[in-house]
Length: 425
Image (cartoon, rainbow, N blue to C red; front, side, top):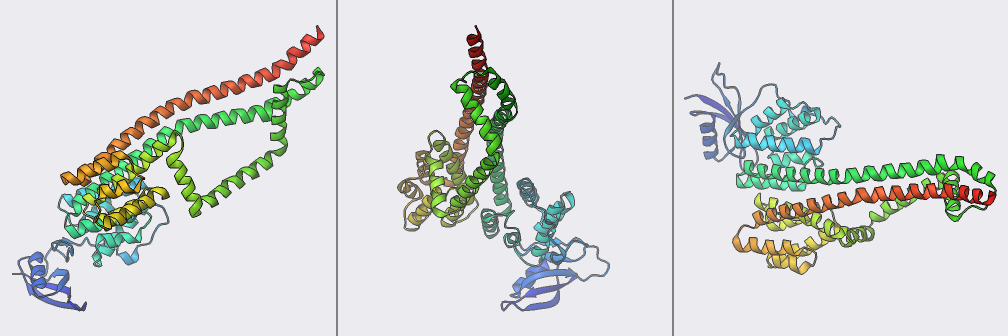
């Protein structure tokens, strides 16, 4: 039987080295464990053996080959480039597929590092690989990238490591990230066209008031007659923009930054978030968006094995609305005191009836995570329909506004001309 050199850690945390025989590296690692040690790496001592050095997978006990020439964690530096959501999603999906196919984490990260053409992602993967080879679990290694991998991500990975279902948890996490990306893309797509129309309308109005109308002032003065009220209003607006444009810019900037500072305070943020949930027309839509994000996050965490109290804490920080976050905190306290989740949701007074009823059904059937995710899909569908209806309404409203303003300008220009012609006759 071949001989293997091992490096291990005893119960006191001291490093222990030695050698023993075994059928392969996995068998040698098992013998090291039976001695009461925690194996760190196992090396084949046979001369000329092509297997190379092998390191024990701490989480699963299997061996994984170390790729020669791989970058160590100590030699990796961040490139300064931000890793976007799309790159994080692709990394999660590909890593989940590789682990599900049976590859150890170290080998899976090597494959990802070799396949990517993004410098920032390659550096990140190399750093993660180095930390894992140093003995850290994946969830701990991800702490070096808090912006790319938030608390939700790290907790789900940790739950997968503890339960031994890392591949399944990562697959659920990738599904969650894909849903969030689709939701974000749909919202941006629905808002892009109306915003373009509004910007074009604003630009057209500004152009008329600053370049066209001033050239007609001399014509109106030559007419000598008293100008109608619409013409006076139009000329006054044009003069104000020409003479006080700097004051408008300063005032707009002051309002923007003042509102931003106020919104960063607790009272201001609560007021704005409360208005978002209760605003006429848009309040119901915003509530559905917030509720969908909450139940999808909570359902994904519960499906990944994260305890319900921890899941509620993480979900509360992910909804993006302080009023809803406070409601989730009240739910957390209720569940901790022995209430069911549906009872705590009902008592908070923040959540939609659909969320409460579906949660109750999930608790009764023992399929709470699945029911929460299904509820999120239902809410997302309603949000999609509402956004499409709003988008179809914005276009004619902007066209009507532009048509009304152009008609007002034409009327303001023609009225004094008609009045002067009538006076001449």
